[in-house]
Length: 538
Image (cartoon, rainbow, N blue to C red; front, side, top):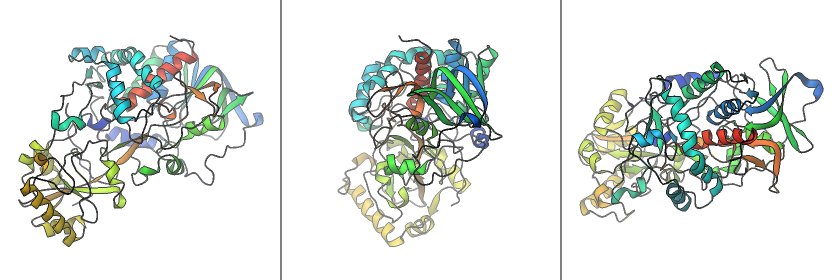
């Protein structure tokens, strides 16, 4: 078995695997867009830097709106503010607008209507709040998705439909699960594009770049400063009046904002100190974000300006696709026998994709193996349903040819290839086979229809390691995305959107029953924040 990664083919069924598909070559190349990798925080990472003095400023620019970060939220915020007639300056640490992702969730749009779908948005929100958010997310944040999601979604669809390289936009109609699969349901709210640039694994990199290009071609007054990260906010008498950026030559630029500053830097997946403090449950899971730019700088700038960071534990988007250090094949959710590095079974495998990693974090190194036999093509047809199950009849031969699958003609040989204790593994499989024959899982209670014995050689195993795709919690904000102090007061002049903002997602894992809601939240919050900064209040 080798460590080479083999990309899966993209189809309507597999495109939205949990909202995080295979990393495209273009997105990988975009990792080089960052001017420099952010150093690991040392000492007290929350310690505020010394205020920048006027004498240190090499250039001062006066604008209406400053946007910090040009990802999904920031690009939309900059373009929206410019649409409303604002003069905008954007600080961006990469050399282009930069993001990733495959789908975006909107409640109802022209694209969903064309697919024969009409959602009841509050039904979706209330189910998420009751069952997945543990009633922890501020309902007013979800209310924005209900009240503005269709308007913003149709704006996005119109943009996609006008660009043949991106669109047409397409609303995904999910198949309702049967009674045995209710825990793996997915709402029909996800949207993708069918253009040539929207079909690779990370189309939103191309989408935000095209969005910025189109806005500038249409005369948008946006001064995008690339390779120029924001480093500090300028605060006067408790009000944020601008932001400082560091140019490629090291000089300091002060952008004064007459209307406000919007923080959109994308969370803190690469800030280990921040992860340790706010989401330690996922410390065994590496970051699968590309580029290393999500180091919490926007959240920390807001904190230094007097903002409050949400209490721990924070929410994250944790996925098996894409992985970091194991080959990338869909089907992690299929409930084959799962064993840890000790060769031991450790849970009921018949679990929703969103909640599988919670058992992994209890295991050595946070990894597991899916173990199955040469009946996989037939057995996989009876192992559940959903968009994440994969095409095993073609996937396994592909993985074998690529050397990405552990295999053995005997259980002993398979254990040796996997690197797990042979005696323990063989005993685990033998006990599992006995329960399969009896039709009753006395150890973990898996549904009898999912109990498939491992008896026909050759035997196989995939190694699975979940990763943190992005962090979902950040600064406390109002429903208008204004940043709040620890006392609950609004900081004048400061907004936060996307993964710099908090208050929407509860628990420690975000709702994977609506693929694309992370990008939906990012784009919607960026647009609504820009509306509010520029005076739209309805």
